[in-house]
Each structure stands twice: as structure tokens, then as C-alpha cells.
Image (cartoon, rainbow, N blue to C red; front, side):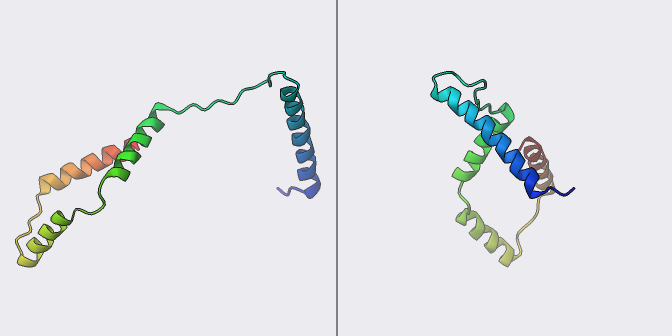
Length: 98
């Protein structure tokens, strides 16, 4: 679909006219027909708390990194399959919530 410049200009005129009417009512002391309101869902509140917790957490735990480097270089690093599976399930649950 092609939208012409004239169509856009007509829409802008209508918008300005409606906005001007609302502004006139407010300036005249009359309340506007509609009132803006912000509503945040419970899901968004949970997401916001999670994001704040992530931002407050440290990015790099040097003691853990150094321990892993030492284990890798000495060949003593072992992967616990149960722990890996548990973390994967936790991550999947968090991803669904967020």
C-alpha cells in the first residue's frame, strides 16, 4: 500500500484539530475527556525485580575463575552431570518467567 503525502497531511490536520480541542478544554478549566494512566502488570513487576537483582550481582567472581583455571591446567576438573542438568532446568524456568 502506498501512502501519499496528501494523506499524511490530512491525518496530521485531523490530529492537530483533535489535540487543539483537548488543549482548549484543559486551558478553559474543563477536564479532558480521557485521563492518561500507567498500569504495570504483575509479570512486569517481577521482571523488573529480576533485572535489578541481575544488575546488582557481580559480573566476574575472580576466586571461582582462578580455581577453575587451576583445575583445568592440572587436569582435575570434573563435570557433575546432575549439577549441569539442574542448572539447565533452573535456567529454563527463569527464561519462561522473564
